[in-house]
Length: 277
Ligand SMILES: Nc1nc2c(ncn2[C@@H]2O[C@H](COP(=O)(O)OP(=O)(O)OP(=O)(O)O)[C@@H](O)[C@H]2O)c(=O)[nH]1
Ligand SMILES: [Mg+2]
Image (cartoon, rainbow, N blue to C red; front, side):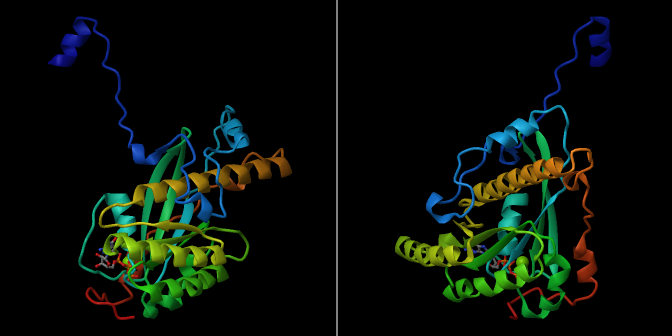
């Protein structure tokens, strides 16, 4: 009876140990993959007004940030989400049916902040339902396979259709090359150069990653979370300035999240193997 013993002997309770996952605890703004290939922040830290605002006793609640992953089928969208969320990699291809959804919680400068990851299907037959999950995205991740150049050419088309559903706000845009492990050093350099041009055209921040080896996957998701959080704080500051009396700002309203996996899987017959697009 160790607890009785402790009571009788008036020993202090042991301190509560909270285990922090260092991957989801951010104290600084994570850097871009390449400072030369980003239209977004090149600063090494959060803006001073963001830090200052968060030090006030008022604890703002931020609604989850909607991140959508788009790109051709089998480029590796699900693989990068699974590598970050579950630290696992599956080499057999299992096409996404409609959309998959994961929620990941971060602690940024001591505040809770979540990313809602909407991993969409690249297969043509699911395109008609795109609007249901493209809408109101704060972050668009356009994904291509570094070992297949035609998937880079599709990037513009994917971004265009995602932006069609996001006319009211300006989302953060990323262009991500996957399967970096499949390329030789020369191929990698050549593909990054080509993709850099496309990223500049799309006004997107560029990243090369590998779900198989884990190369730059954590850094990429931390960067998304850091930038989206900074943007959310700035939006909140703006709304306080515009409506000083209003305390329940847009950003403190909880968004409705729901799992579409069961919804779609009940409507579409699953195609488990092979890419049919
Ligand atoms: N070598 C290697 N293979 C990868 C990598 N990422 C994904 N793959 C493989 O590529 C195939 C397709 O990956 P998925 O993540 O399912 O592709 P997807 O873009 O989600 O495909 P859809 O859901 O059909 O749109 C799978 O066989 C993965 O194992 C990677 O970084 N390296
Ligand atoms: Mg998928």
